[in-house]
Length: 364
Figure 1 (cartoon, rainbow, N blue to C red):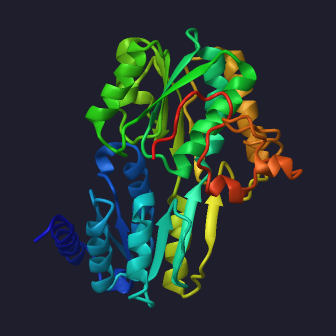
Figure 2 (cartoon, rainbow, N blue to C red; figure 1 turned 135 degrees about the vertical axis):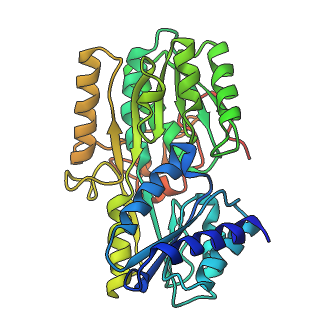
């Protein structure tokens, strides 16, 4: 019996013990690429799952450490086969598997995080505009660095990660033209050993601020030990770097998961694409999926400027990618050339290029 089925059997057995008949009316499944104990990405998704579990008439099942690939198809299928009405698949690499399984189970609702393909009417996509937080980080880093060297730990070369790098550097260059970034691709979402090694290598090369787009607090801990600064990812990582931590981009999935689970329970679920940032509407409305957590270890004036930028982004007074923007090869970005005031969502969704000023190559 493989890991996916073993985990599912255990989860269902547990649910059978603790769930009342009323709670079992709607079953919601979650597929995780890592463990909730990563204290980052999966941890925050599991916080959202717990909010769903607290709803009347709804029970949840979570499968963790599911690889992106054939095993994801098997795990998602097992959830569909065991009566789950709604299934959240919570990693970009689950996109194809989600759509593959959805075609065979038209009565089950599927929600895929950070993807862009919904090949069937029972598939919805949702993501967060994490890059808005990267803009705030770019401002802080530009003013806090003493070496003008920033280390960036990147997971996979997908648009989400590339957007973050570009947003960070675009803002940093506005405040400090001398700032440089060294990017290390670790090709994993969660591997504390690799993340720690990448952080140490960047520090050895002169970086005095570490940015990460990976899931564990390992890089923050390395920064703390080295006496430099770092940004947290996905959850508030301030406790792992009391003197290193500048701010964390915290993923807040709770209200979205609750809303969508209730919609399935009540029969009002509809297909949609959702992309929330610091607010749901991008114009100062309700809090969205991106929260800046625990500013600290910076001068008061830098913190005030960072919070003002956060407020401007949240209110829609400032866009993360204002024109003019030039690509790495010096060409003006197509949206800007066409007269747009900023890059459009269509461009951002498929972003596969660096901005001018990044001396690196995107891996293939």
